[in-house]
Image (cartoon, rainbow, N blue to C red):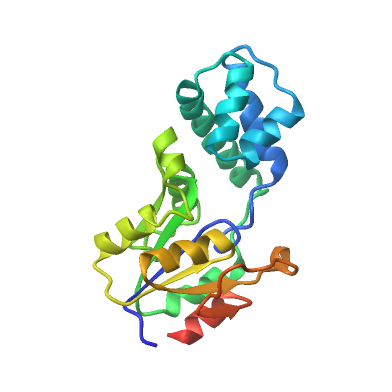
Length: 215
């Protein structure tokens, strides 16, 4: 099918996933701003949990989750920026294949918008992507993350795409694409070898070279 725009998830698609240790350090740094020393279980609940778990963890330490969350987002963005600068979070080599794709390209990620800006700046991807967006640093921004189609639909409206393909590496990406009414491509990177899909993508590929070939 001919697409006039292709949108990409970031982590696991354009860049390698952020190491868990980086996420944990960011959560601990955020709690430290409130003079709290969280348990490992509390830290992991913030990283892997939804809004109800984050609210529950904050209540354990007598914190307002809406006050805590923006500080988490700021620390997470700073920690990932440092990981990029140290070479711990890297760009996949096959991103280069996208420079040969004569379509409008963009990024729609669940990661912090500041982190996406850092990635575009660090690897000088401004020429490649017309749009690059992540979640807002607020509880509402977190609530709107995929599998909600909110950010994906906003991006589609901004670029004016009529026939759009969304490329991701997780079930939330495929579900968000379905909810937005667009085709999807699942990239089965090495870290997704045993990953089970709960929804059927339009395509399943092993690299971004295959996405370029679709066009």
